Structure formats: structure tokens, C-alpha cells
Image (cartoon, rainbow, N blue to C red):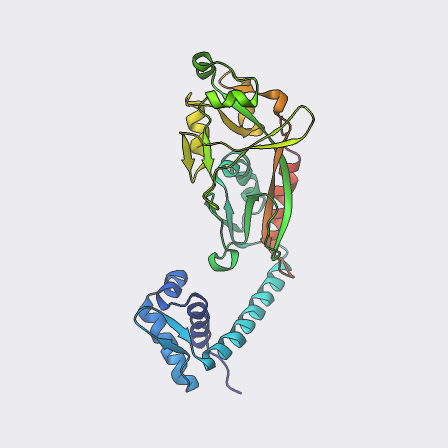
Length: 308
């Protein structure tokens, strides 16, 4: 029985990634290598096996029948290795290692980042890498351990830990209301600049959510001349500068309301919230660092006041 040396194992990882992405260049970018090194590595693997694994063209590569069989078995073996690593790291007495987290801009700046100093002080052997963006991530492709997102995921491969139901309201600056008047009904919104956030995941506007006098939920769809793409922080910044009405979470707006910098309007239509969840892939064994982060953040957020 021939054993694998580390170089051969690396070649197998590069082969599987190239097969998954259909490109040596894409695999090289993902792995932090050069396309030439990935090509050489896979060619050595083909020479060792005595079979051709890919059909090559100038633009792409695709698996041969032998390559498809080899990729299926190698991927299974790599997943078993990853599972073994999760198992042993999950048994660590002191959580350690790199933790990669994806989180949206608003939640990062106003909920998660203020908790990080306490977490890093509690777990000094854990390294954190935070991606602060509103785009959706692929856990497998991009190598993230955790993500914080709105709503319950449709992907059954993900586990969701509820963090909170964050209530929302509509806000404006006193100066804006002095110039344009205060709306009292949803119909009045047509006479105002309502700042609109375009969801990067769908390219569609995020509706404003309300509750009517009968307690029925309302999703208010509208088209605005002022639209913000990609970063919801821009909507808040424009609104706080007097640019229009905007819907925001109470836990963010509350300090500015208390200082008199913002005014909440349409309170009779308030009462709805959006759910934030902490997501991670559905693995049998969680690493100690992932488990430590989940328990820490869930515990802290659930004990944080949510005004509204």
C-alpha cells in the first residue's frame, strides 16, 4: 500500500478545488497559489496515476470520466480528514485557532464589534477574521466558520441560532421634519423622501415593515428617488444628515433619539421586528472556538436591552 506524502495530499486538494470550480486559475486564486503551480501539481498527479484527469481547453477544464471518479473519492476522503480535525479541535480544553466570521455592516458596527474586546480577552488564543459586508457568503467556497444574517436560512445545510428580534421604527431629523412636515399615515409617505436600501443579495429594495390598527402586518413597497446600494449604513448616514425618512432598528436609533438628534414618527404603525441569526454549517462536530463564539455572542446579545 502506497502512502501519501504532504506534497501529494496538496496536489489532491488542488485537483479537487480545480474540479469544483472548473478552472485552474480560479482554484489558484482560492488557494493563494499561481495558476502555473496548480497546473504543474495536477500534471504530476496525472503522471503518478497514469491517467488523464482533465480535458483542457484555453478557457476552461472539465473532468474526464476517470477524473470524475477520482474527484468523488478524493472529496470524500478530504471531508473525512476535515471531520477528524473538527473532532479533535472540538475536544480542546482551551479554544484556539482562526475563526472567520461574516457579518452585515449595521449589525457588525452596532452589536457585534462592541462585544469583540471582551471575547478576545476571554479567549486570547483565538484569532478573529471579520468580513463586514452585506453580501451573502458561501461557507464551503469561502471558508467561513460563522455568519450573522437576517432571517432564517433556506439552506438546510446551515444551523441557525436566533440572536434577537430587533424592532424597527421610522426616523427623521428635526430639521427635515421642520422643512417637510411630519407624516401621520402611510399614505403621507408619498409626499416625502423615503430613503431606500437595495438588498445586495437580490438587487431588490428592502420593504418597510409596519403593523396596522388591526394588528395586521404590512410590507410597504415603494420606489424612491434616493436609493442606497450595498451598505445599509449609507441609508442611516444620509437620514441623519437630514436627507429624508428612514427605517432603522431601535437599538441603533435610541441614543440619537435620546439626544434629540432623531425623532421617531409613525409610532401607531410600529411593532414589527426583523430576526437576526448566527449561522454555521451543519457539521457533526463543532470546533471548540466556534462553540465558544456561539455561546458567548448568543448569551451577550440576549441580555442586551432592545428598545422599541
